[in-house]
Length: 383
Image (cartoon, rainbow, N blue to C red):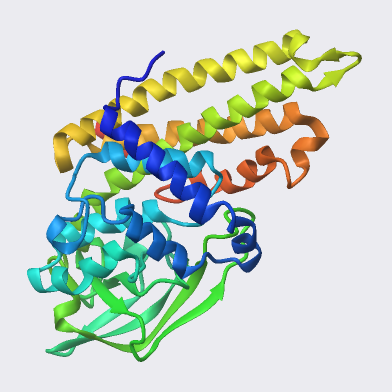
């Protein structure tokens, strides 16, 4: 089925992204995976190419468009290239809305130009060693000292944790805590007491720096409160739909790409003197995956269209959760089945299917686990 989602300007942007990947990312990606981190030069190159801050107003150096279809193109092309380490989606789609939607005019002038030119890399710190999806379990806390906050605690599994120049930290700002007693505090690189721990060793996405963060009596200026005091829970809920849609977009793109390369592989690979593609079981496997991908693509594209046309209120949390859990679980199934069809070669790291298998496994976990997505959907139907 021909996709109806994109206009000519989106197709032109896709060519720009592909050229950027070929020039600035793919020649260096193997080294970044060995290093466990991408180069800051790649972020600056992305900024120069106009790939950062797509939805940021032009006055701050951004693209000035809230059309999520551009972000969709970016996610699809980075996924097909097998280059999740340069986390532009996290920067643009997850953290960007907090800065454009919640920041004061002074904060926007201070942070958004660097956000758009690649000199200021961002992260958001929610997860803690004892608190993942359960925000009520957050123990990192900040004490109000009048003109500043004193922040103490730790975070883990923070994407861009090593490179980040600006970290949005979710912290308790009331003694009783709880989900309604959380605030967003922005901690900047070089702040006394802010320390980075290990660059964590993951099974996939090796080029993406994921770190532990520690806060020891960190003085956070009053003017670095982002959004409403004690309002973090509401802010997080508002922005999670776009984050989950972004993950779903990458998931279906990954599944489709795996299906493409596996289809070509079984046509060429012979077993018992005949191509694998002549075996009925293989044809059935390909047929099932192709159908599942086609159905999922239709739903995800509709979610993107709703979000692109409706702005912040265009896609509700329930349908974003549906897209996220279904597409990521499909990606996981397709990766497993495609690896199986590759046989022993699928287990070799130099084959794209092996890398996609390990890189994609986290998709059903971050941004809210599959189980949390089902809970959100179930509550909406049975409340």
